[in-house]
Amino acid sequence: MTIDANIIIAYLAGDQEVVEALSQFRQEGKILILPTVVEAEVLSSSGWTKEERLITESFLEENFTSIPLDRHIAKVSAEIRRETKLKFPDAAIAATALFANTPLITRNIRDFKKVPGLSLLKI
Image (cartoon, rainbow, N blue to C red; front, top):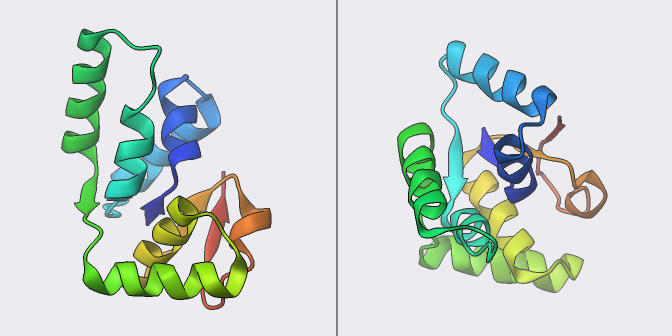
């Protein structure tokens, strides 16, 4: 399952629905994929102390499998962006989910539903 930035942000904010869903996915042995662009979005928050940022980095590293933005994902991202007019980060997230052949867990169904072949799960 590929995770969008809004899900990580909701988790870190203590959103109980998201906390329970991600816990359930882990208990079921599902691999939780974090596109590196999501990691960059989450860690770019300017309101954190250095300690909070380090704790968040550790949390992401320990709980998610990172998939970097490689050449293949970059090309698919560009194609998605051309076809759907999604912003680059969202196109890269969608391309990562397609590459991993997993549903994208997001709260942004409206934008991502434009991407052909992308399976979506809203929590």
